[in-house]
Image (cartoon, rainbow, N blue to C red; front, side, top):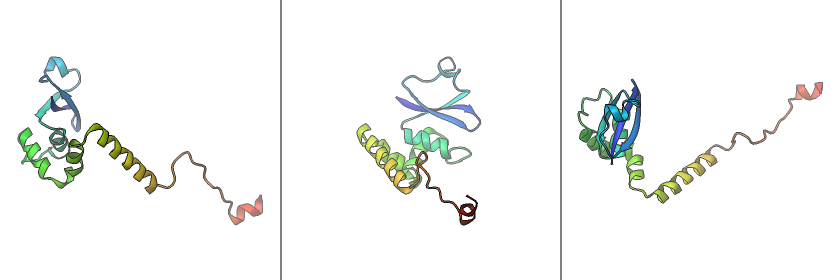
Length: 122
């Protein structure tokens, strides 16, 4: 199955995957236009992020090639090679890392301390 980018508005590209070539009849109710096909999610994502007004990207193959050479796409390339289980574990680890980096999480009670002036008036 190939990847495509469906355009809903000027800067609104939606990544989708389909086994059939999108047509006006099959996808016209969802998108005003479709870009693709892309061989990989990485190539489609690269085009969505960096393809606008980029003279080096004229075809989907250009996007695929440039994505593989761009260090900003390393995480996407790594995730593409993972199994579903490996990806799930990686996302869980990332969530735990984020939780450790942000000590206060909404929903936890906040310790309330009165200022000296408030204590005098209480």
